[in-house]
Image 1 (cartoon, rainbow, N blue to C red):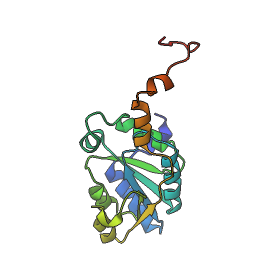
Image 2: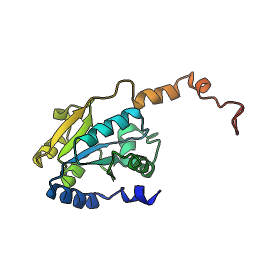
Image 3: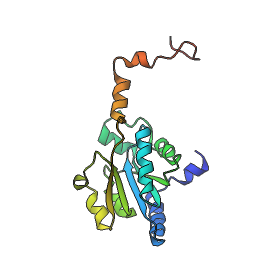
Image 4: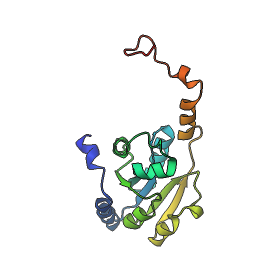
Length: 178
């Protein structure tokens, strides 16, 4: 991990201080959360749009244990530290933290972001964290999903019966399994 990316992965307590200072300076803090296990173009576009809503973007990613509880025993594909490092490599992401709970309610209560951003497949009135966001004077913003991008579709493609043929290594590639 480079020093730059490592320095942007923070504990919840460190982020609480950063956010408090930013808000005291009149800055708007955007916050989003999720698993972000297999980052694709749809995620990048979403994160860029989320960043445009504030002066900084903080991401909270589910811990490996949380992902297993939510998505099942074969997930995550990428470990939490790897996911955090990948996300800090994006210019639109200012800080990343890992949270253990299944919902971001507790981390939102700690950070008190100005804006909580979610993808278009969420209904703010059904999200358990919405009351906490509003309690601290924040707003929930939904960003429409990018058409044609989804981890489920990618996983289905990889698992499909035709995938063995699609992902076969060419003979000229070193270590080919032919």
